[in-house]
Every structure is written in structure tokens, then in C-alpha cells.
Length: 169
Length: 169
Image 1 (cartoon, chains in turn blue, orange):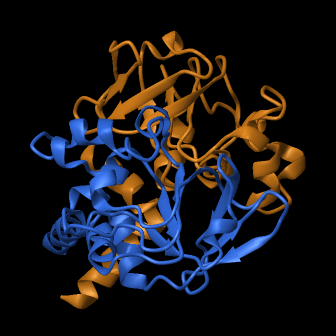
Image 2 (spheres, chains in turn blue, yellow; image 1 turned 180 degrees about the vertical axis):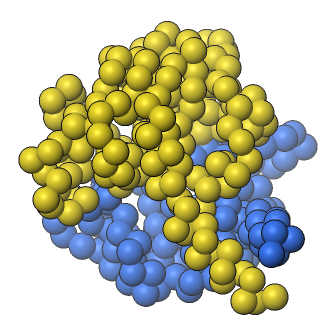
């Protein structure tokens, strides 16, 4: 036992921002976008995903447009982290700015749909995914300032908190 | 749709700290305590609970001893919040200090085992639980400084973050 269990939603490679935040929903607010998240690749996702679940995917997660909603929607739905071998650079920036943890894991595709895994973030220089049989999947380090941004719920919240604490000094 | 779905674990009244952190496990670390959490009232809990789940209980949650582990263990297991009509005062203090959100909800006991509910914390003066059929259960306000403590992951982390940000100024 090592911390909380997270349920895996397993997607393929090249999940793009239009799958995450469909163009037809973009004129609406986040509640509507969330209802359509991933409908083209996993029609059951938006209705069934629960707080704390993990999205696990193949390479090039988040390719496509720069729309920040494609990352924010997973925060809205309570996704604890995305795990993939690689990300679009724009998506990587957007994700941490809105408080979504991305873990880069070369072996991500070993994880199975519905599997329960534990996330060991005690050492941010060596994040680990722990499978039920005890096997460990190492992830690439996450810099302290990005972990902090996730813990604060994104860049805007981080700045608000920093401002609030400095006015208390 | 309004934010993430959380699965309900439904417990009865007067859940005590010995049920949460059994005495026989207290000489061990949190990993062992977590394995025994609630074994006397819900033997399936420790193995099945997942990150983001909610513990929903009757009145007087957390009565018994002052052991902080009885609150920290639910954080370790990834529980998103406890929802109950009332809490032991000691437990209430310990919980927020270790980053566990407690929601005081007079109608908590309407919620059913396994139900999926949404947690609406947009207005901390009026936290809401939203059931699948749209019914709302209002909770008592959570003061800003306690919400902030939960967001930071507890008092120690809050102080570390405040110290880190003030040295950046």
C-alpha cells in the first residue's frame, strides 16, 4: 500500500485538443465543454469519469490547437493526472498553468483500461506509478515549481495565494 | 454537469478514531495504518477506496482520541472530503491541519452508498453537493483560511509555501 488508488482510462496515441475540447462546444462554458470531452474517442468518458481518475495515453498527447480549455476540462472533470510517453509542447505549458499534472512515462502504454494504480510523488525527482502487482513505472522528474503550480490549482491561484500571503507579512 | 463526480462510501453515526486508525496499527507508519482504515466497520474500504471518493457518515464523525492519524489516513487514501452532519471538535481541527476537507451537511444521511455526487465549492460560503438527479444538499460555510489550508495540503505545507514565497519577494 502506498497512497491513493487511481482508476485508469486508457486512450491511444495522438489525442488532440479537438477530442479533448470539441470545436462545436467551444462557444459554451466549461460545463458544456466537459460534457463533450473525448466524445469522439471515448463516448463514455465524460459521463463516467470520476474525481481522482487517471488518463493514460500514447505519444503526442494534446497535439492540435493552443486552446487552454483542452487541459482545463480535465481539471474540471477531476482527473488527477495524465500519463503519456510524450506531449505537445503547447499542451504541456497550458496543462501546468491550469493545474493539471502531466507525467511523462515511457512505459505508459503498459497500463490497462480500468486498472487501479498508485501515484507516488514523494520524490518529485522520481515520480512513480505503482501497479497492483507491485511493478513500478518510473516517470520523468517534475520540477518543483511545476509541482507547486499543480498543488496551488494553477498559475492564477498560485499568484493569488502568493499575493495573499505577502500581504499578511 | 458541474465539476468532478465523486463516489460515496456511506458509513453510520459515531465513527470513532479507533475505527479510522486502529490502535493495533498505530505503532506502524501511515502505509500500514491505511491498510487497516475502517476495517471494523467497512472491511472492504481500505482495499477498494479510490482517489477522489467521498466518505459520508452520520453525526459525531471522528469521536474518540486526538490521534491525528485518524484524519491523515483519509488523505493518504485520497479521500476528497468527509461529509457528515457533525464532527468531534478535535477531529475537526486535526482534519484541516492535515489537509482533509470536512463538510458539515445536515442532510448528509440522504446520500446512498455508491452514489456519484458532484462537489460545488465555487462559493465557499455555500458549499453544495449535487446529486445525479439535480437535487442539491447545502453544506455549512467553510472559512477561507480553512479552504486555503486544504488547498495547500495542510498547515505544514501551507507554512512551507508561505515561507518559500516570502523569500522570493
